[in-house]
Image (tube, rainbow, N blue to C red):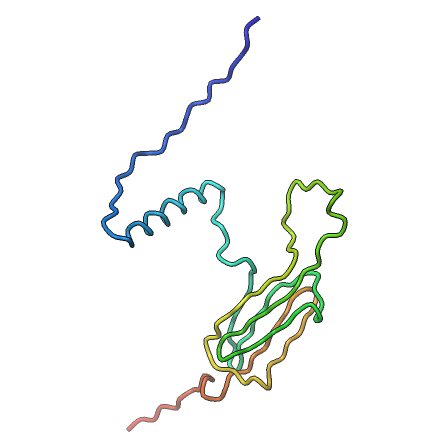
Length: 155
């Protein structure tokens, strides 16, 4: 009896020339190669493990970070200079010995996310709220960092 074998053509990578005359060229080539490899996964890898929005209003900076399933007691927020740090702990899965995972995407364990704020803020007036899994920090800017409209006079 004959076996039917599917012929799958082999895709080859084009031959590239490597210009590695300096250390920075080595790192550039590695970055280029890494980007080619990760592009084959369908989408680029995320630049941050935790998504967030940081925007500015007239008087404040606002940071929104999704923290699904966490309560206020699970989070710690610190500000040191212009460096804001959020620490938290997601609960570990219970009874993992009898589970056979096919995919794991839920966050588990501790995390730390730091942000460099683009303006100085008034520490005593910071407000932090958590609603429906969204941590929102409202950080009022100091008077010197606020946008002011300048009146123009004609001479």
